[in-house]
Length: 268
Ligand SMILES: NC(=O)C1=CN([C@@H]2O[C@H](COP(=O)(O)OP(=O)(O)OC[C@H]3O[C@@H](n4cnc5c(N)ncnc54)[C@H](OP(=O)(O)O)[C@@H]3O)[C@@H](O)[C@H]2O)C=CC1
Ligand SMILES: O=C(O)C1=N[C@H](C(=O)O)C[C@H](O)C1
Image 1 (cartoon, rainbow, N blue to C red):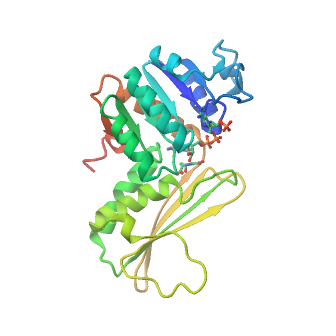
Image 2: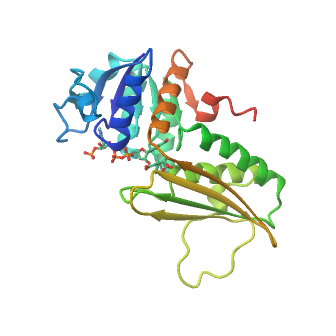
């Protein structure tokens, strides 16, 4: 499968180039960065710590997409919306791992998914998607006298909070309780905030050092606590998940899909 990596010089971009190199049946067909990026003209494989491939980083996304079958996109919400439009034009699979997406970005992704398969997830790992399925089940089993709090920690360079994974886990908890996360969510506490409101789902975001991604969902009841956690030890697990998603999406009809679809976890 011919794959383009956008944001190819970023932390995930470099990891994706390596994952494509390591996957039989996949080939890097182009590497894209924004206009003005110092990475333009550099060999994408060399940036990823591999021997030179001859694929030089460029900023002509549409030209790259029409020659490819899929695009792996871990960039920014604005860039991902633009790439979704181009991937729809080129009718190629779009794997969107970008987090911090607001409702207006998601609406545009939804529109683009009428023309091409988009697989979007705040976390492409098997472990987190399995955790989400467990959280949904536990939240459905326990009543609202069990408080739900989601704690995440990431490296100091991360720009969005709460993390996409924390939101994904919050959505799973909200689904389990049959409530709307937008109404139940409490993402900031500072000062005299008053006692915890029953039924809310709280978030706490920690930032520091080089932490790749730690997530914990706490169910706090009277006199006991249940904690479900995931620790990402290497970015390659997200990249491998993204490549798997692209392969799964090849030949699939247009639509907006999730990693749970790719991993067949809906039946869990
Ligand atoms: N779903 C998942 O499993 C995972 C999701 N993520 C998410 O992926 C995203 C990227 O993370 P990370 O790699 O750490 O971030 P980085 O900042 O290291 O990488 C993002 C890259 O995208 C580039 N970029 C930005 N705008 C454009 C554009 N318009 N065209 C082309 N390239 C562009 C940036 O270039 P420049 O720096 O020059 O602006 C940068 O090289 C985040 O939203 C993160 O949360 C991360 C890990 C796993
Ligand atoms: O920015 C990151 O690094 C990560 N982002 C994703 C998120 O926001 O949940 C996934 C992973 O935790 C790493």
